[in-house]
Amino acid sequence: MDEYFNIPVTYQGEELSFTSKLLMTGYIHKFQVKIGEEIIFFEPDEDGNYRAIIDQEQINNDTAYDEGLLKAIANVIESMKE
Image (cartoon, rainbow, N blue to C red; front, side, top):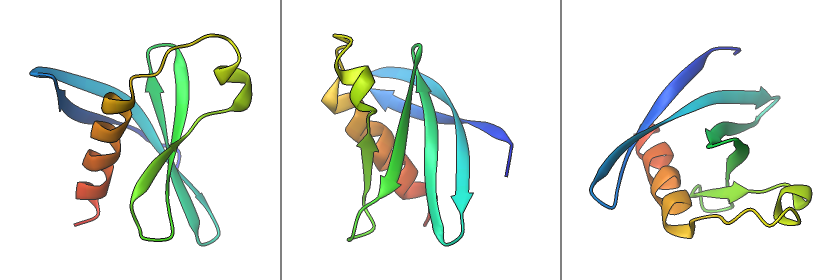
């Protein structure tokens, strides 16, 4: 699947939208989400909940990540499977 779509997120009373893409590899899938200028991947954990995966190089460049925003995006992704 090579189609982009928007994930709408309400966070701290603000309506946000993030460009996303579903990546499939065999039985494994993850979502690629663009937050600002960064690409963050969300993948399911053992319980089926989504978690943000951040490249180690991105962590080292002093980029601040809003944990609450990442959780809000993960919650929206989880609700899409229902």
